[in-house]
Length: 472
Image (tube, rainbow, N blue to C red; front, side, top):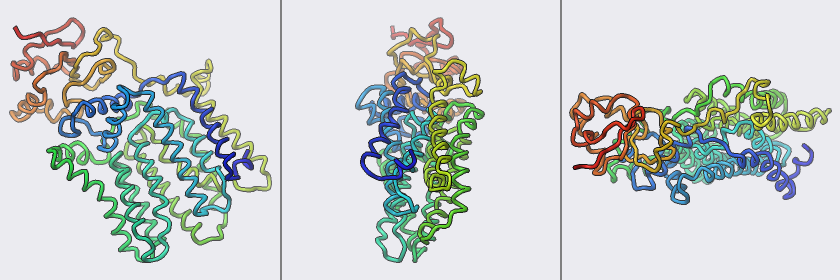
């Protein structure tokens, strides 16, 4: 199997695609529950497609380019969960193929082929976390495309436009997922080891990095959303996304297979002499990439949706040393088969009776979101949820800017201030939502402060649910 994928012929590419699709598609066809991150993305896309503007008409910290992508997908199909899964699969395939192409084109390793893409896709299939479209997965695609622009900078004046493009792509990635901005460190390190004029080249890279944010800030300034952009996207720092919902213990156990492959590749790479100076420098850059990837994952304490994708590029690179020729090639073939079998077992453990208990690893689908059965009769209504549980939005539509309850505390957490009360009145809009779901006991106080808006809401008999009565 290793010998087959060490060739770079079209037949090997076709076989790789068939293998990966056979591994991933059956579970997608059987269906996976919607994750918390996917539900938030669906709601953001729906609101933006309906005409809302991020950070001005929506209290949410989703990065602007990711939010725009969700709006475009919602314009294709309403609540497009299947489309999210398809786009996530395509993004992972594009990342693997692009990285493999860069490795082959620049001869970063003496051996060529599709082994890097094979390892990338096999290990990326261990968890269903990468089957869901997330801002991190979207932004990471731009980081992969930035890699090739960082490499041909071996002497001063060598097409420095590539450095600007590399910084620009990293900046675009950060506009999808803010912690990806840490990858500018990888770019600066590449400049130091590859470019002759490090200072000027670093300035070009940084100018390219800040350019997308300058464009975004200009757009939000002219649309009146710049204060919200700073408040909801930049001020929270690098921790502005919701967690994946998986327990920390399960996430760590899911990293055992990637961690073992990465550790074995690292150990063998450090003992492998490389003939070309470029190959040595590239290995140094991938070590820095690995450190930055771990730091980016640690920003969200490893709980960001799709966090496994950060480890895949360095893992794919160092695995090339693991799969290179050895006196006992049959051991490497056996190891690759073990990785493939581990991906199959971990991915489909929920379909095999008692396998989850045997592995002490409940399936990720156990932690997916399901509609709240208490409000099953509420469908197709405009709704405002005053609390952190968004499940009632499964079959209903958000009708106010207050989507993220934590961010909404800038208003609802300061109702003793006149300015906050005024903002609540303005944000409720000319047509308030038909229903309120009060999870934080806010309605009685809101009725006192804003009787004209919240006075018509009366209890329905369901816990915390209020219905707006028509005016007499």
